[in-house]
Length: 185
Image: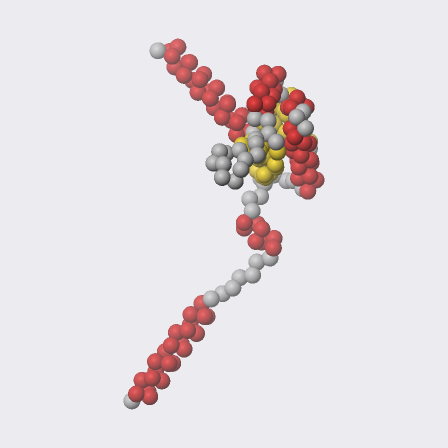
């Protein structure tokens, strides 16, 4: 009786293990399938030439900042109007950008990432190291900035981060709405 009980337990365990292993299925993904599942793809057509052009523009901009040529760096920037037209940066905006870049002039400028969403909403993020610091120094010594590469009629332009433009437009709309509300009261 003991042998039959032991035999029954062993058979049940073997059946249990084999049924568990039958449920396991392995799925092999190709590199492209894996990349598609993990990466955000842009919502527009672009190729390696586009990537290279944007990388070169951002690199030129950062090199000018490294060399202390803030006026020339700002001269590379354009302004995106209502997500449609790319125009030369207005003088007042250019002066403000020069003041900002002068105030936070660093000792190193590193490109962190370039991400693409659509022709007018992309992000080139870079970090500025403001000063060298000792390992135990708790003070932050870096700041991050963003540029918005924009493609219009096949040509790429660097604009200020579109997120900043949208925030600026939102604030202007809120002020206008608040002013109109005060006038009606």
